[in-house]
Amino acid sequence: TKLYDNPFAVIVQATIEPDRMAEFLEMIQTNAEATRKEPGCLRFDVLRSQESPNEFFFYELYKNEQAIDYHKEQPHYNLWAEFKSSGGTIASTSYKTDAEFLT
Image (cartoon, rainbow, N blue to C red):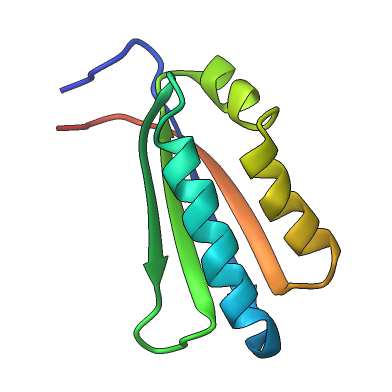
């Protein structure tokens, strides 16, 4: 069942530099908790790979694309952008998706 007219999801796959793990975990917790309070955020999950402890997946669900635009303007989003630009990630790939079936 569709909850909103144009739900929009982003799935991020990120591999974190091992020596930056403590910094990452603190930053991503701050980011996730603040993002969940945004008016357009429906869900923000941070998942860790069982096979590779430095690999994470973020599942972000927003009411629409305008909500993700708003998210990218927030100070807590900039924490992630700064972490990446400072070399905290080995790799990071984002997948933009349209939600089809949600419960």
